[in-house]
Image (tube, rainbow, N blue to C red; front, side):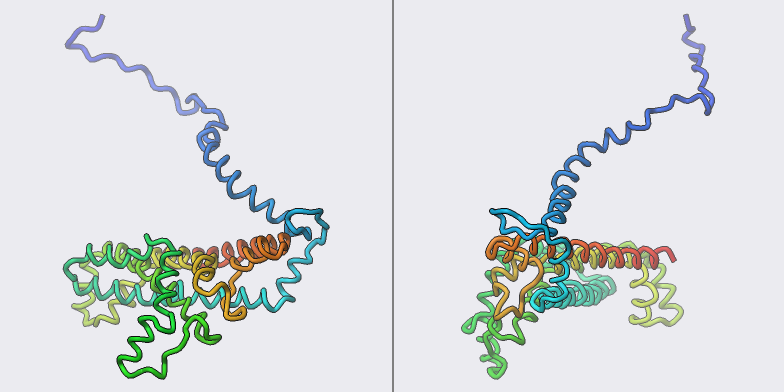
Amino acid sequence: MTSPTTPARRAPSQPRGQRRRHPWYRPWLYLAPALVVYGGFLLFPLVRSAQFSLFAWDGLGASEFVGLAHYADLVADPDLRAAFGHALVLIGFFALVPLVLGLITAAVLRRGRVRGLSLFRTVVFVPQVIAMVVVAVAWRQIYAPDGPLNAVLDAVGLDALTRAWLGDYTWTLPAVGVVGTWVQTGLVTVLLLAGMSRVPNELYEAARLDGANAVREFFAITLPSVRGEVAVALTLTIVAALKTFDLVYVTTSGGPGNSTTVPAYEVFQRAFRTGEVGSAAAIAVTLTALVFAINLVVNRIGGREGHR
């Protein structure tokens, strides 16, 4: 029996080489539920889509193996080329313009130390929590020939600029892109504000002692410090641009003509309206590969720059 004044003797620790080894499959057991859900709801549909893309099938009757013919159509069909071209244009409105606006806004707010920053973050983030269908309906009213936008242009004497924004072959795609800019700018700004808040003030004070102005501070301190946040913002917004469907469906339905068709809209159109399931699957698989490739490049560049 151990005396109250005598410390209990500790069991001798096992030598490093004799420690109990856990079975190799134990980590996989912990990951198994997530892997099952991921495989069932993402990988399996993707594999089935790749399989469907090799067949000509209307979704109901018999199918015919056509190999890579649907993928060849992606290059030969001018409508499909136009759809992917429109998606690349939308990347500029959904990703690049919000990034520039977000950097400027966040840098100004960070430098000016504006009061009510929490309220500002909430306000600019509101478009992210509104369903895209609701956003599309609201902007369709704004762009209407007798809508608020044309009324404002008339009121300030710019009636020459008024037009049917969603019926003009030249301006419809930019008009849809502006909606994407409005939605994504808040997200990008909040991400960049979070990144800039981690930059020590001592760096800015040292730069000012060396005579750096606001522009030099931005390019020498602020921008290098938020490269990780920039990569995340570009990843999210590029994915949003490439998978845009509901915004186009509600505002223009791909028109006028095919001036605003995008790959996701073509997938819906061919799979559920024209009975070209194989072609729709080929577009979906190609779009998935494009999203993966672009975001892989963005993250490789962001990661490489962040480790310098």
